[in-house]
Image 1 (cartoon, rainbow, N blue to C red):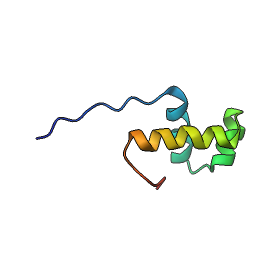
Image 2: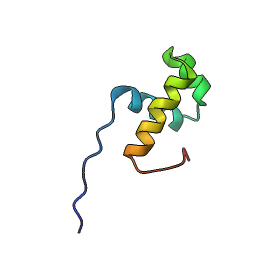
Image 3: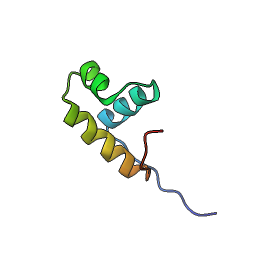
Image 4: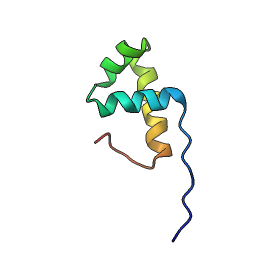
Length: 57
């Protein structure tokens, strides 16, 4: 069995992913968190890279 490394996400990355899980769009997440669409996409991109995934679904 291969060793798995623990993925460490920032608080904002976790928040964005929680809202994605609820079906919110990036724009809606930005409104909820009071940040720009670019900021939401930045956090989601980083989280997806860390989780080694390329889609939100």
